[in-house]
Length: 170
Image 1 (cartoon, one colour):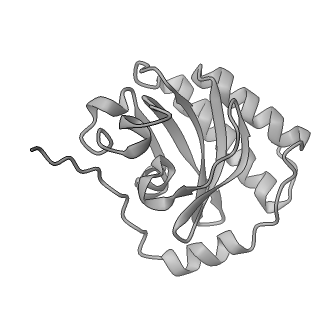
Image 2 (tube, helix red, strand yellow; image 1 turned 90 degrees about the vertical axis):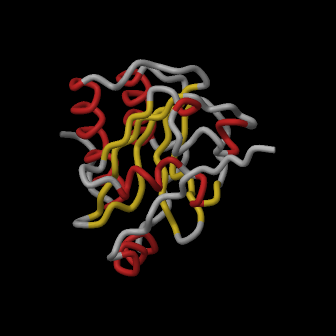
């Protein structure tokens, strides 16, 4: 018998303050045109069929917006975006989740829906990473290019302005 583990993300040192910022976010309508535009551009930039704006809220990951699949709430412990907000540079790109020891045994990688690729950038409100703008695919990709990373960071900033209630336009 072999045991397989996946790595849950560490919580930031300022988790209590970060969580206060998350709780202050007003919901965005699923059909908000600015949100749709940010998600569609993220999908195009990353060449993924799915793009999401997530909020890491306590022990869950909530979906603030999604294109390419129905919204689903995940436990924070298995959410890739939890790793993204914990990264020092606020960026995580995993070409093939099945080949990465942190994620190979994750239930959404080794079980349904069999996610294989993830690239995400932290979305910030002020100093706090409250969630992520990400693209996922059921097939592996190459690593995210410098251009893709830069564009995703720009879009994550626009998503942060949306969450803050300011216009998302550059």
